[in-house]
Length: 571
Ligand code: FRU
Image (cartoon, protein in one colour):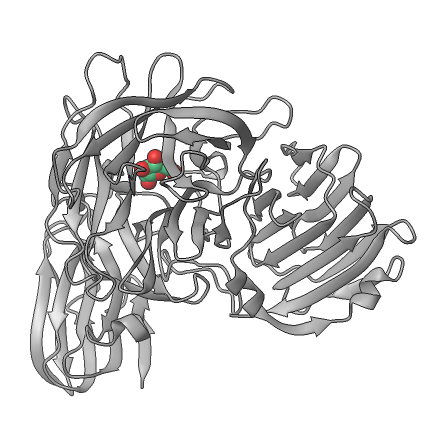
């Protein structure tokens, strides 16, 4: 295969690649000059196939090209004023096994330059919340909030990937697009916001249906309405239709009305949660339907739950999973949602995510206990579904509080996590497949030897510590070129130490009074995740640099650490 990309605003953009008969190419183009049409001509082995054009200057326009014969394909802009954002190719029959082949992206939407890394990242462009996480046709599907053309939030699409094990992913074509109106300009007015997906067929045909919020800023009377679409061929959503055109009346809700999460209730009916807000704070709404296909007849049941603390505004991305058999009235359910704009006064952490445990009879949720999902607070918009072996969830490895409109912000998803009830708390340990990332054992004796530094090669590592007794004090200090990063356990609790050395006071990422016996730490380009006592305490922190940690040093009293194991990880 040959592969070549040239792009500079002063030059004609050309993309060359071998291509096979039956392939499909997706590309986005726009004009840099208001009075000039953008045009890309497509040739195969030098003979003309077709050309795609647009008069759009503000936002890239999407075009699909069918390739009838094999050869060397050239995509060529007709003047320096034609700009191509992304081009990828795929074979519709084999894309499930092979994924897409990215032929071109620009400097502005390039993924971070890391040659390793075991966290899910988009192939180009911006990513936030996981959406539609579920198993259809035997494969795990992950959709996500996506903007293809830069590393900043803008009008939302749904990106898409599939996996067999939640860890090794193949990128698929962009699944869902903003409406035509929103696709004209890159003005961040809305698009296909977060939502969920449910299976509607059997395991073989893999049919599924998605639900999402369509947001259009300043639309009257509703900015946010709920839509549904069937999954089509699984590669692009079919045409969508509105299921909820307006908020429920009479509740004094603000315009916030988003992130439909559809799931099977204990009464065998499809239920939908939505995040909203009123004067007092965050509100989670419950709807349900008698329609077996969940396509319509959605009726408002009531307010499922509310949360008014920590100065929060809207409840975002609500999700609920049963932690046992859904028919059993003793089964506890975990209700998980983002507390937008919340701030924990004791640590300074913002946009926290709560897990509320309670019983759910299909109509009412009786809360019994509450805990924070993640003491690092960079596990936002957590979404889970019940897979064969129980609930599994994944979150955006970031927090809106760190996002700036003026800076690129590459992100990843967290490691996928099980959601387990141990009788008194919800545990969120990594899924078992994460252990399959272990490649080489590093010399843990070096770590245990007092004051020694263990080199961490490319920085993609897992460290597992067995403590001699619960809560035994230790400090693990990583050497990172741009920031101070570590993990500490002492009488105050378990803490991710973080400073970007910029002098700004960081919140404290601490699980107060945690006294674990085992701690698993995952470090990757741009992140650190801590799972203590099988995920009884889980902490995730995005590192604002993808540079590798170089080494680690363990500080502990003699005999405090019973054993340590360190692995180099690789996908
Ligand atoms: C949460 C969120 C959702 C919304 C989406 C937009 O991170 O604000 O409430 O649907 O992001 O991208």
